[in-house]
Image (tube, rainbow, N blue to C red):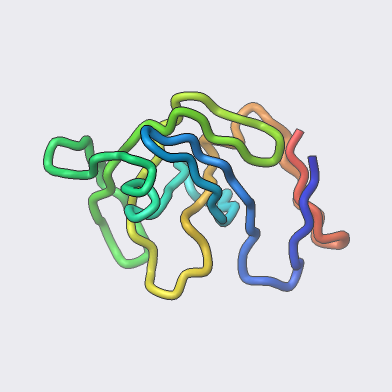
Length: 127
């Protein structure tokens, strides 16, 4: 499947469907080939029924502004670009204020596939 993007834009937007514990959601994630793991906002994780409280598993996350903690939740199903992953661990971390997307679609979703970014035509293809 291919989706269009603005080749002059600041990010590569992907519509993703997330199947959570209590609610499902459609989210706008930025395709990020520099992100090892997929990440969603804490607000989105809470909406889908995930408990991000004291008992939740967390990991160290290295960002442009330094090291921070991120909570890890396992999303039941993640769908994007006509592909899916089951029981996919994702990081939950708040993005900077004003960010126009709900998280990042990382390499963990893309592994085992062929990703083509066509900047002439403005097409993202995953097959």
